[in-house]
Amino acid sequence: MESGFSQKLIKWYTINKRNLPWRHEKNAYKIWLSEIILQQTQVVQGLSYYIKFTQHFPDIKSLANAPEDSVLKLWQGLGYYSRARNLHAAAKFVVEKHRGKFPKTFSEIRELKGVGDYTAAAIASFAYNLPHAVVDGNVYRVLSRVFGIETPIDSSRAKKEFQQLADELLDKKNPATYNQAIMEFGSQYCKPQNPDCENCVLKEKCFAFQNNRVAELPIKAKKTKIKNRYFNYVVLMDKHKNVLINKRAENDIWRGLYEFYLIESEQELNTEQVLKLKEIKTLCKSRINLTQVSKAYKHILSHQHLYAKFYVLNVPFAFKKTQTFISLKNLENLAFPRLIEKFLEDKKL
Image (cartoon, rainbow, N blue to C red):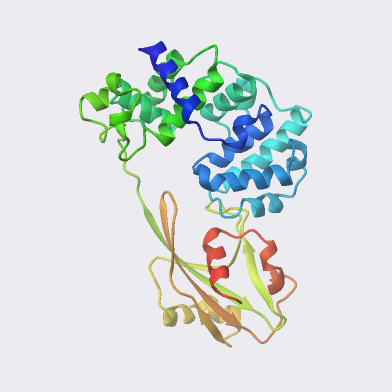
């Protein structure tokens, strides 16, 4: 089954693969860039970001030398911003430790910040055709269904078990194509929901199909706990059309991005409750001039659901030099979370 499995996948891939720019690359930097962008992001969304990044930062030195704010601004809207920060840190590391030459071994690639076993295997095989098998969510799904593996994929045991099987199945002579093939097959054909099993090239040997268990596999043991958070954003504007802002620095979501003054509450507050908060009275020196209240925004992250409203308040004085602010016309130059970007698109301040 093993050799037949890999050959069938490669044959399927040769006929059905999507024409994506990084698939024509042997440049390890650009392959690495595509892999980081596509972590937790679908190709349809990631493609435009890949093009923007390769245009702005054509090589790793240009990325390393860029200010972090510029990298985050370019990443804006893609989410999981730690990827962008890690990307930037790794580029600096390559310039400092490897003199700007992208590393050529699995172990050295694995040292880069934000690079795990899967990403290192992908880069090593795609750029250098090294025999390292990839195991991502698509591969877990394909192997679990075809070989009837019931080990929960979110368990520590699964990582070793699936990696061992993936290594055995890997076409050592053509690892780059095989790795691309199994991931593409999982992404485009062996989908999480309603895959076209009747026309699948692996259906005769597929455990899940033969035993009517496609919907059950792969198995995940843990349920994701969702936390609700309530964000009350105060868009405070002074008489010079400057807006009070803050750069998120805590070990929380959106670190390194900008936001308006935030009051987080344990539950949803109405406008009257927000305006009575001590923070509002302190900010406005008790002279509250509310000009806008936004609609409610809901923003879904992997482990959090955010509920936000924006309160635009004008004050008759000028901000102090000790406060962090920016002119209204320059707001677009800053990197904001997508949630705030939506508000700015809806409201003309």
